[in-house]
Image 1: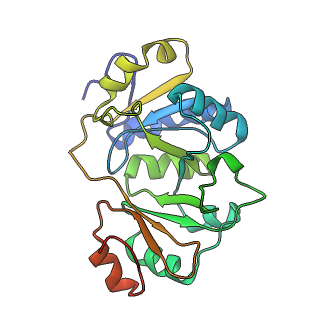
Image 2: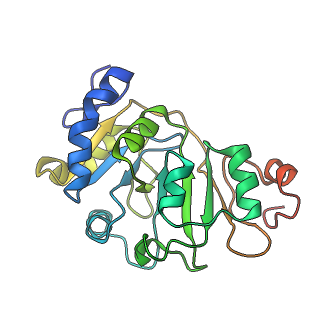
Image 3: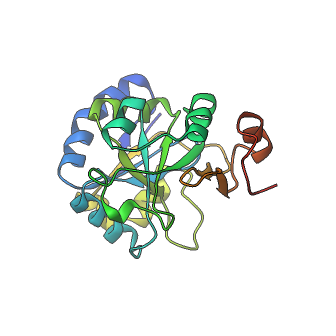
Length: 223
C-alpha cells in the first residue's frame, strides 16, 4: 500500500516497526500524532500537560471536554494510578482489548486534570488495533485519543483526509500521520462510567448495552 503524501506507512507489521522509533521521538517532543484505531482515525499525544496542550491547540478544542487515553496492558493502568472497580474489572476482562471505553477513578498523581471528566474519572480504552498496540507497548506509556476531526465534521476514515485538513501542521512537523489505509465504517466505542456504585452507559457504541449487561447485570443506562 502507498501511504498518503505527507503520511507514514503504518499498514504491515514491517511498516509499523519501521515507524515506531521516529513516532516515539515525536511523542517525546510533545507533538501530536494521527493514527488508526479499531473504530476511526484518532489524534493523540503523550499524556503530560505540554503534550495535551499541543493537542488542544491543534484540534481547537476548549478545556473542560477531556480526551480519553489508550493503553496496551493492565500494567499501564496501574502505573497511571487508576482503579479498576469490581464492575470495571469484569468489563475489562470480558471486552478488552476492544471498542469499550471505561471511565475509571484515580490517577490524581499521574494524569493531568485536563484529562479528567466531569464525573471525576479518566476515560481509558485498551485498543485492539494491532499496530497501535505495538506502538503503545514500545512507547511504554498511555497516549491520549480523540477523533481526527473538527467539531461538527465526521471523523476521518483515512490518512489523506487528515493530511488535507491539517496540511500546515503536517508540513511544519507538529503532526505526524500514521497511514493504515481507509478504515471500514464502525460505531464509536461504547463508554461506561465506572466511578459510581453502579456502572452507567454514558455513550452507546459498538458494544450494545444488552451485551455488557450479561457480564454486569447492574449496568444502568441505554436500555
